[in-house]
Image (tube, rainbow over all chains, first blue to last red; front, side, top):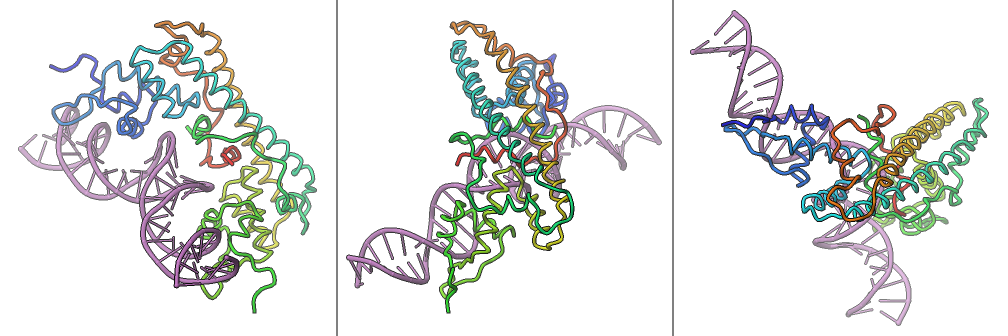
Length: 159
Length: 159
DNA sequence: CTTGACCCTGTAGCGGCTACAGGCCCTAGG
DNA sequence: CCTAGGGCCTGTAGCCGCTACAGGGTCAAG
């Protein structure tokens, strides 16, 4: 009486591209539902789990936090979402990304200026070091306040 | 026999713009040296501490990790740095930032495409949700491998 | 003498994993 | 049959850079 499409956690991991330990972690924090277990206690997944996990993975790659993903999943699970709700979440997220890009560009400009000051010779006075020692409030201030900001940087995690 | 310019941790915090707890944390992890103590055990800081802490703060704002900062400080402390060494660190850092900007831009494009598909009407089939459920490997892959990558995102932390 | 602001140490938590340790299970080969 | 190896299990601790307590001591003003 075994499922046709029963996947072990290892197979699910391969097919979804999500680490085994991460899958278990998602289960623990309630992002993935607890799957059935085999007689010996192994997790047995179905096609729906793969779908959901792919959703989570893709959303993570797009920089949604696990909390935001929980929100999206709640909408999806309840079949109660309107496209507008989802779009709002998406656009909010876009704004965040835009802001981060702007911050990084400003950062880049400052660093380039610093590096340009640098002769490259050995010198007891290095322009970069001098700039860093400057006590005045630096030109690089984040553009605005930020909520917990856990997210979009995860796109950049090492694979 | 008290120092002329003895600063309490609170005063140091105000003058440097670094949180009190963060200052103590920096001491614990060896980024800041342990200061003298008053008779009652209070930390007493001097002008050199303020300088160093400002250096750390500014470097953090420029996205250097505490580990990189330790490296910079080691160079500075030993007076053994060449400008070229410092510049190299800076340019490495710039490359990282550049890469993150590129990643975020790609991200932005994908999200915009998704949002554009969205009619905004209530609908059982939302284009964004569909896109997220898509099992195929998404178009948003980070540009390259990354080392620990703890850093430049901190620029974006809430103030 | 009391109030309140400051300071101390130490520990736990955040997000989103990752990496163990110390087991059990299952299959293939000898 | 036994053994070796892979996979799976749970649970805990670690990563980064803080932040937020809890539970105390100290100090200056009123």
